[in-house]
Image (cartoon, rainbow, N blue to C red; front, side, top):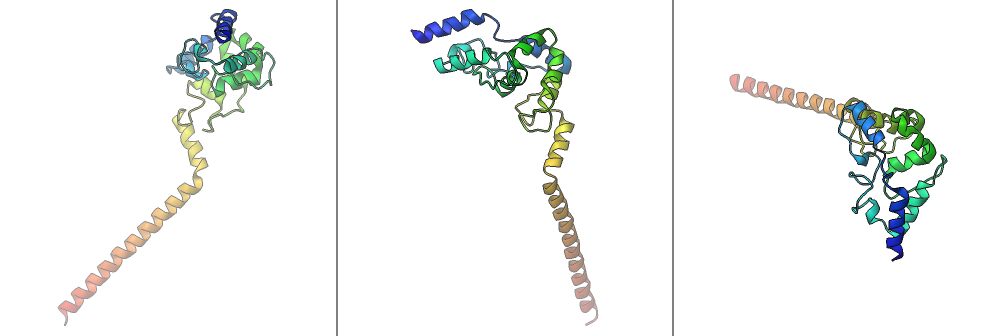
Length: 195
């Protein structure tokens, strides 16, 4: 009974203010890529519903975490909202709920306010840049292909150098092996012709 009451109270207090589609629309229009709610939310369909990561599926402990996250108005307060993914939680932690709500009128400013220091998926592309480019901040293979290539080349440069050296050594050895066969064949031919 208490769980039902808490769930109902959460719905009444929050109303339809769980999702902020202004940011999704801006990112989609700016990048030209189709973007769903999973950009910031735990569920690709958004926070409303009864599936995993949506309001209707939350336990009492998760409802408490949600309410704590919703009251994180100042920046620097670490939150763990069960309806947000790591990027969504990090946005509120870094800029605070008050600034986030102000930015609803200017979603194009979110990247600048959030900053370019965070790279949650360690793909070499800042989360703020991925927001602008409409790529997923938590998927290290989803991003600008050239930036991903250069980041991977830098990250795995030793592997690349070893592969190039091994390939050169392989060709060098193979060419000497073929030259050895040719020399051996020439020697046999000479012996057969001049016994």
